[in-house]
Structure formats: C-alpha cells, structure tokens
Length: 231
Image (cartoon, rainbow, N blue to C red; front, side, top):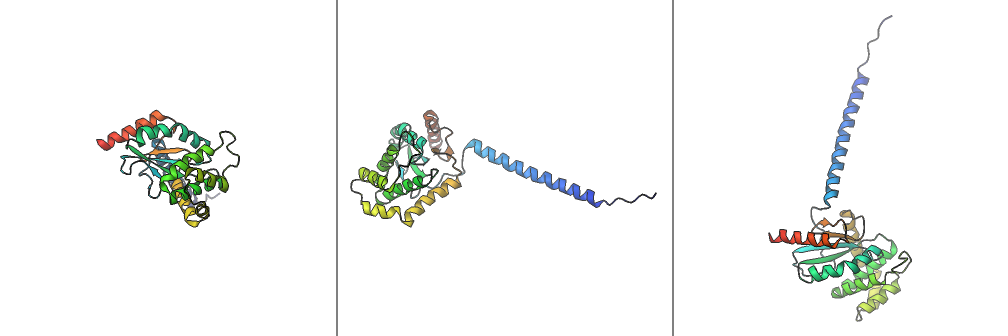
C-alpha cells in the first residue's frame, strides 16, 4: 500500500483562521476595556455646548452644570423639587455655577410636545423660561404619571400662567414650526452624542454624577471643580 502525501494547504488555512480570530478577539477586548474605563469614570472629553440652550446663573460662572431632563419623567420632577432649590440657593445664586437644561425625549410624543413648549417660551422670552419650566414640572401628576396630561391646551395654559404677557397665538404657531422642532432635535443629538441613558442625568464640567439625588456628592464635586479652577 502506498502512502499518499498530505496536502499542507488545509493546515495553513486553519492556522490563518486561528490567528485572525485571536487578533479580532484582542481588538474587541481592548475596545470593551476602553469603553468600561470611560463608563466607570463617567467623564467626557468636553462638555456639550450650551449655546442657544436655556441657562440660569452667571454667564462667566466658573463651573458648568447640565441637566438632561424630561418633563414626563417623575424622577426629573422630584429632582427639580428636592435638589434644584438647594443647588440654586447655594451655588447658582452665589455665582459659582450656572445650569443648562437639555431636553431628553424618553417618554414619546408628550415629552416632545413639552420640550417644544419650553423651546417656544424660551425663544420669545428667555427670562421667563425657568418659571415655565418649574410650573410644567409641577403640573406633572404626582401619581399615575403615565396618564396623558401634556396636551397643547395644557402647555398653553401653563405658559399663560407663567408669562402673562405671552402671545399665545404666536406660541401656538411656534409649537408647529420647523425652527422649534429643530431646537428639540438639537437637544436629542446631544443626548445621543453623549450616550445619555437615564433622566435626570446631571453633568458637572463633563462629569456625570452617579446619583443625581445625592446632594452631598454633587456639592463635593462642585467644590472640587471650583478648587481646580482656582488652583
């Protein structure tokens, strides 16, 4: 019986596939490791631009805070009623920080309509935005928040209460305008760009606070940022 010479090609193919597989695995692991580090640090290379976004506080305040919020979100309502007043009193009113609000549409059409209403008020009367912002959160039901409550009539009613001089006919037009829709889309572009996954998300100088209801952690981080600025 004669022995047939084995063809080396299958062995070479297998080895090549194994090498390619190992390289691919290393690339994936490296990418995952990098993402995990970034996630653990909760930091970004730079803060979102706040140009054309509602901002309260001194323009030249040394520390910038961004709230990614949704008017349909019960946690956002709670944050604005429990945490924000103390933050405003201790840091915003004293000129140490400013705060910018960015719409996050995680609850569908009602979130979008509420966001458009806020943008419409801001467009016509920027100084009145924060009163409307507060009143819109107050209008959110404390229970059964999933029920439909954001309607065109409701946001116009709240706008009238918040800004007695507002032109409701003009606001109604603004609610359906492409310009206001684009402003809301600009916010969502930032939400997607910065990978925002929950509301409220509080970002201080590009660093996301792990627990937005931990006021001590927020205060400590602000003071740390202030020291870095002054140092």
